Image (cartoon, rainbow, N blue to C red; front, side, top):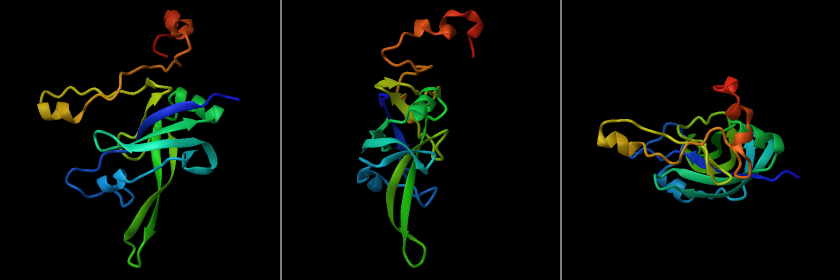
Length: 179
């Protein structure tokens, strides 16, 4: 049996400060506050026949985003996440509509790993407790610097804590540099 890969990341970016939604499935700050994804399925690209793990917890991040912790349990999905193919996160939002087609309720049916989420900034940023994604900003303005705080140190490629990166041919053979 394969050991699950523990992941953390952003499932939904912080809502706009001025309010509003880009899509009717987007969440408000209040909806992020009360979202609980614990126990929901972790799917691959929203395919309900391809469950690859389980969401363990969700919480509101310091920046107002919806953060998640999950276990990827399927061996092939683990490899896709580790090699960078599937590092995006995407919420599967179910909506109940009123008689006029307006959204009366938004509920989260599932979370998916994907190549890239539709919403900006929805990425896996930690694997097995090791940061695997970072954002660096180089704006001269203080406002620009504040908008883009690094969330994690970039570590690429990913090596599990128990492995030795020096044994990787890409690190020991100069012909393998860059690819």
